Image (cartoon, rainbow, N blue to C red; front, side):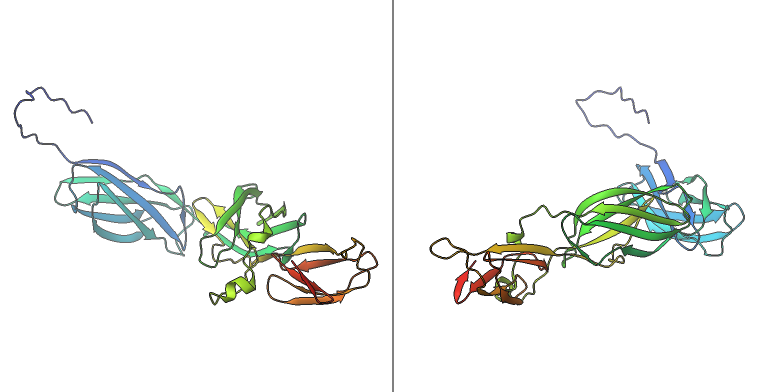
Length: 293
């Protein structure tokens, strides 16, 4: 767009500019049968709230419908439903017109492809300890073999503000992906709120939990935790000595864990005990009536 002005700048001038259709394009390179195909339309000088009409079509004569709307800030977004029984390989496009501006145009063609489906997303275990190697797997339909996808691992948040932990590449083989991931917990477990702390607010203990998603093109599958949640389990080791710095051999103990549960038992001859697969977080213990933290 080339605008040249040669009039003086010391007075007002009225200049007429013609509306322009800058682009009308699909947001993806494929139209999944049974899914949706998104599009964008960009303009200049058509005016806010200018009426727009978009008609979806295919080379084989399929009608995808008509969308009527209004331009906002020279941008219009929409999507067409692609019929599930539409012929694979057919080419879809859309025509756009602006009734009050005398503009019209047409998008590029994109092919109709099988609907992408991701299911049976699974962790190889329901619990993870530091250093555990886990296998993440899923079945992927509608994607060619050897195509590379992106697996994202999130730490689950009850308020849906999930923290991204890492992204991993995964390649489709025979309609399936399978990758390995070594689990580590790098944060301070002392910062995990205990049940005792949460009782004041009516909350409940929530250990670190994880889920993963699979991104295929511009769609991310698994955001509703279809993989189910992987839970972090921790280990603790306690060594107890008396006032003379001697091991409290064979002393009875009661340990209150972060989730409010308790473990009881007897220290060994070295005054120590190791507990595995416990809820991570701050714990307290009582040795024959002497409370410790």
